[in-house]
Image (cartoon, rainbow, N blue to C red; front, side, top):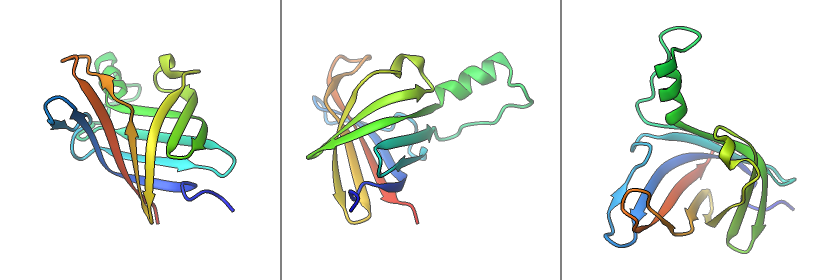
Length: 141
């Protein structure tokens, strides 16, 4: 029997919460889109796109359009492991080469067809305060 995380999920919310101030932000906009697919044999693939993302005016995209498209997405695929409420990603292919070969630890809760995934607290690059990224998903049907 496979784990309840196995399947395809659609993003319903992506937030960043400042643990010092309690402020909540939407790093990719309130209308961000994403899907993640978890397979029974331990692979995951995901893509996120920011709210308001624009298509290039022609192919190939201009340098500035290409930079904007890169900055308005997140994508990776690779292995994942589960241990209790811990979800560990091991990206093998990513939109950002710096993520390849890293280990990304998250914490998750599944409630029927809803999945919440939270990062461990990390220092905000802008304020230095501790922040947590939270992703809410619903099972794709």
